[in-house]
Figure 1 (cartoon, rainbow, N blue to C red):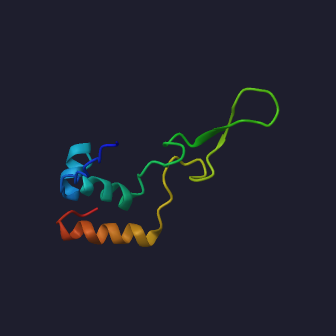
Figure 2 (figure 1 turned 90 degrees about the horizontal axis):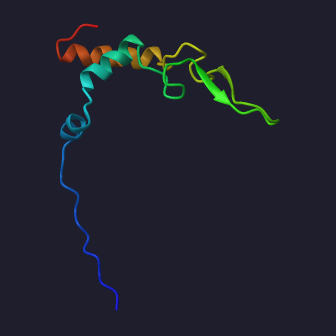
Figure 3 (figure 1 turned 90 degrees about the vertical axis):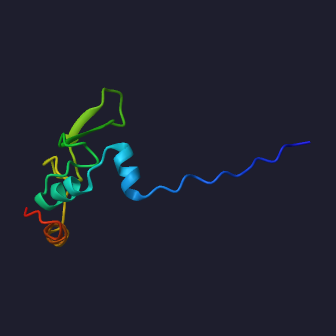
Length: 94
């Protein structure tokens, strides 16, 4: 005989509570996006990624294809403008 596992509901938490718990400041992240200072999600801001050649050898590094070696996430001008407009609503000029 198997026991039925009771389904427990996760606690109802707002997005703000979750961000506070993991230490994210949404306005600071929006400011980083508006200024183009968001580090690349692939290389972590290093501008290089490692790859393994098909033949024997140690991993080599190459320029990150996502950020083209800049170390910054590619952010469209439209998204930058949207973030600036949103920050102006909170009285922050970027």
